[in-house]
Amino acid sequence: MPHERGDLPEKVRAYEKRVGRELDIVYTYHDMSLPEGTRREGQLLTPEERRVGEDHLLLLSWESKWWGGTKKQQPTWKQIAAGELDDKVIDVQARRIKDYGKKVFLSFDLEMDTRTPDNGTPAEYVKAYRHIHDRFRELGVDNVVWTWITTGYLDHADEMKRMYPGDEYVDWIGYNQYNYFRCHKAGWMTFAQTQDAAHDWIRENISDDKPLMLSEFGTAEDSARPQRQAEWYAQVPGVLKGLKGVKAALQWNYRDPGPHCDLALANDAAWDSLREAAADPYLNQPLK
Image (tube, rainbow, N blue to C red; front, side):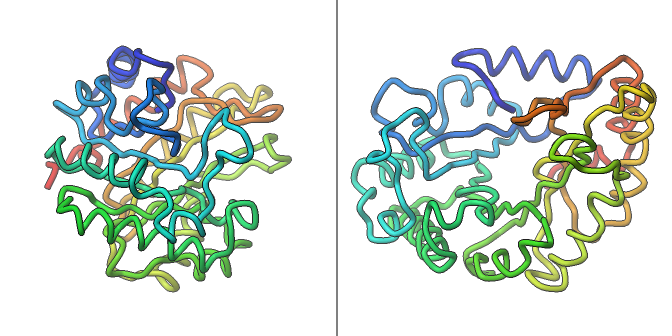
């Protein structure tokens, strides 16, 4: 859930009111700027996240970027793997998470298959991910659920295979698939069409038993067919029941960059459909 400064709890409550249920997982995004500063972007587990975490699980997306920083300030996977960020960034964040105490999902560079070559090579990504994992372990951090999140785009299949850190370094696997429609010049896809191929490929080529997460899913609207977005969300529970090992699904209700890329719910019919889908007993199982 993108949030501006201190408004995360309010946005969570407003979304929950509209969708008609409490969320299990709240997803936030952070960069690798210096965490000892005043920027919330560089602080895993802000005061607002801690408040939300009192009755929700947190999924923290940690990106090897310094949003708004200079080119020189942008971390590379090679630097991370070499330990150059340990003292000022990695160790500080590790201790923050350890002090938090509760389990958190932690993702390092989601959609890493779109970040080459700017951040480095696939091998350098794997080394950076493993370094962060091992550094946390050395510091006694045992409350992280290590979550590897890719796009799921099968034209990136080779990159995804080369960038998987290994079963011993990953607890959960996530993938982000959308019905973009006119956004990115895509055609209309059903919910099943957005999910099935990526799910099956991951099961066959990455892991056949790791818990899976639809870490971002959603659909654009079709202005020529106002009911189409509602019809799309109505498909969600039935399709999810057929996806082996999917334990969580996080709906994206925001914009993507670019024209026609508003993936938020467009009308009351869409909200009604999502509310009905979210109430399905299959999506309301006890947390384990």
